Figure (cartoon, rainbow, N blue to C red):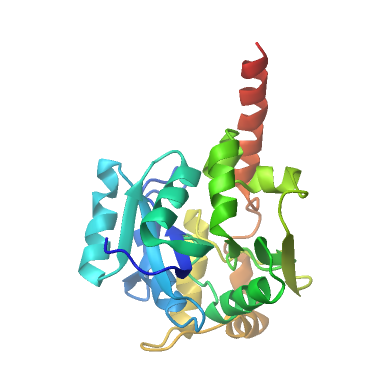
Length: 262
């Protein structure tokens, strides 16, 4: 866990536990764990200074630390339930500023899009910036300045904020931060390229089996071209609710606020 100089650092949240697909981050895609592909693809970024895996102190995530050691990936272990705190502590140790938030369930993350988001973050002097619009689920990436992360860490206790790194607080307090989004895509939000269910794994394995070549990465347009040729692939994981975890957290917020009032 050597420290690095301040820079634009991708923090990839990753834990082995998953209710819907246990161990999903280490499921195989073209002979390598999904998490390996996330890191490998991010390494093609031209604007990231470093990449760190933020996992948990739970004993079951010893396997994630082992994976990081074996592959010479940087890592940090923090809270299992408070993801916001895990991000904050990771960012402090590695002196990340700004932080690029990536989740380990995005094994087709596109480094060229990550770079476009980073470039626009700096060009517009934003505090918060991310991929917006109607993009395929699985390309998610966003940036925030360290002071924003610290502000969130200090000032929010909602379950959705602690689990989803201040998403609700940022949305509810636009006056506090200069925020923006890169609306690169239109009409593509029906595409599901994330890894949360068994059907997602089957879909992603089909994508990797067709497009993966050792020592290279395929990009968003390659996937779209493949799906134009083989539209039946999209039927593999059709019908799954997008952002189901965040929607569940919002319901937890309602119970949390209600309990505080009683």
